Length: 348
Image (cartoon, rainbow, N blue to C red; front, side, top):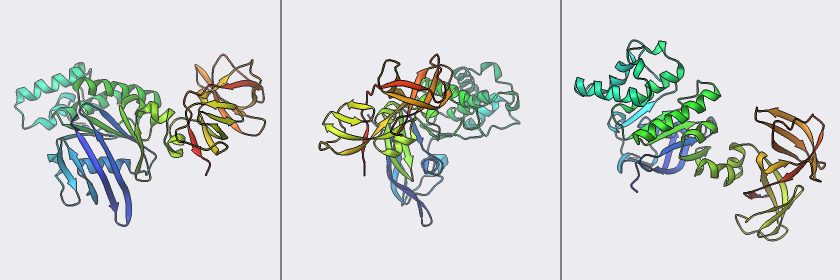
């Protein structure tokens, strides 16, 4: 399938400081992508380079198979057929909702402007608010208007720069799902920049995890969680601990929590010292188990508890258990492993 966006070995520098190094990824039409990473990793610089706001030192960017950025060539931002949504939405306070949506359609006839605006009001569930002003809307409603305005000129690519960052956690995930549904309904190719993995999981088909200007892994949210390719991704995505182990066979690693079965991602000689990633959902609370650990802390999450446990050796693990299992701090509880995905890293 032809790509809507291709980024090939992208390098960007600010003076002597190289911000992006050999960044490469692509998006097919209708796919929602996400660049996910901690503050300062370079993710916003990628978005600005796609938009044409940052010059490219090396590599190139293509939108709909047309080169728009390279070290020798740069298409102006307004000629790239992209839409953008910013952190603060940037709505015009003196214009009504429908006037905000029509703002980028001045070259269209009045009839076509009105038709397109009403179509987007319907898609975003804002038909009743066409004559309202931004200050009369909730944050979520303003976000929908900003999305409608960005979609109005029918861009080939939509860029979103942490558009949910000013909202509380629950609202962020809810809006991310709503935006995903709207974009899919309109079959729009989009890319989101965020530091929030739950937001990324809620909206994106493909996620690129970045650190120090490089893409560490690009994959589905499921694979990033269960099959991280390195320690950074393992630590950044989800929660978990890394415990020592020894390879016993091509399909088994021995740890203090017992033998963990599964195909090793790469071949290791028997006896090789490795580190094993253990997620909270890999550790099952089981009163009948002979393996026990002490509760050193816990976090109530409504439907479940996240228990922080210490083994007799001093190794600490996390355990996710239904909230009707309400154990006290310093209580000893039975646990067992149930690992579906064996994730190991070389000890050295």
